[in-house]
Image (cartoon, rainbow, N blue to C red):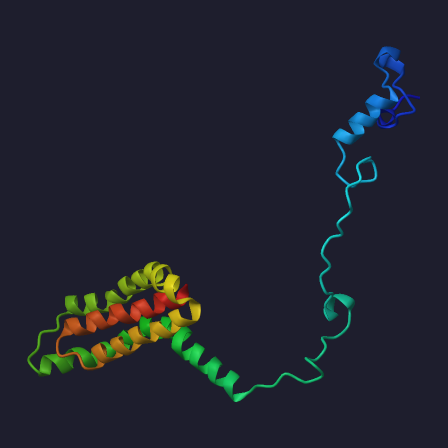
Length: 197
């Protein structure tokens, strides 16, 4: 019986339909084995040292055990952790939904306020003010991580982002004209754009 496995054995030559002229000598088989084997493998004749793969610690979940406590202590909600959670939630995530929807109900209050003072605030100007949030979001998502993040890092970028939030709040709350609110909406859009990245 002739099999292809005889190619890999230096003691057996190929026979059968291939004929005896195609037989491999032990030297040819050895050279072929060296050519197609990995260094340090069992078919290699080189003295390459075997480097074991890096060992990673097995977690308790992989072993089937319940998660162990850190140094025998149970994880607790510390005041610092609670403050961090509140600041991150209100300072970053809340800006998306609040910045998008805050102007819907405010229209009935803000526009009559300006008109009562004899200041112009048309529906087109109101639409521009509302739309400026998207412009600021585009600016913040494109330039924030590339410009501020490149020099400050992630943590400092979020801290610098609060400057834009304070500026936008002042411009929107104390706007003497409608375009101050539009600029403030651009700044609050930048805040949301930076926080998304």
